[in-house]
Length: 114
Image 1: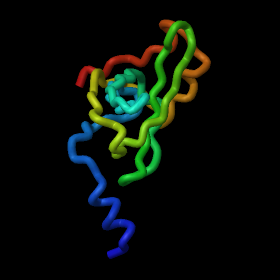
Image 2: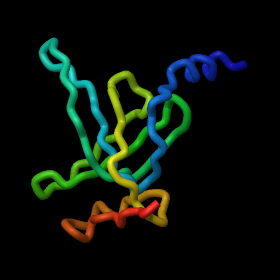
Image 3: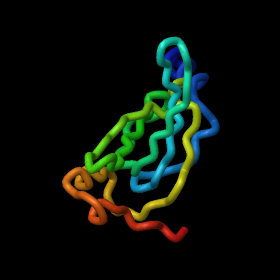
């Protein structure tokens, strides 16, 4: 067994929900400011997933005050306290980069009725 694979397997979280591109997630991230720690929640559409294992990342996008905001979160990072699945989305692409050019109602993802 490769030592790197063994170390990565130990770092994997088991409380990560099953989600795909198009779903709406709420990521609870630990933020450290001036020696204090707080939880900040970032809710948005999943526009991309990358990597596998302990290096897996998810890119979330949301509109905030008329501006598009994207954040990339490592799924298995200790800085990510919790990931909640808010809503399932129905899309036909693996990456939703086309949402960057859309605003308002045109930037929505249809809900999946599963």
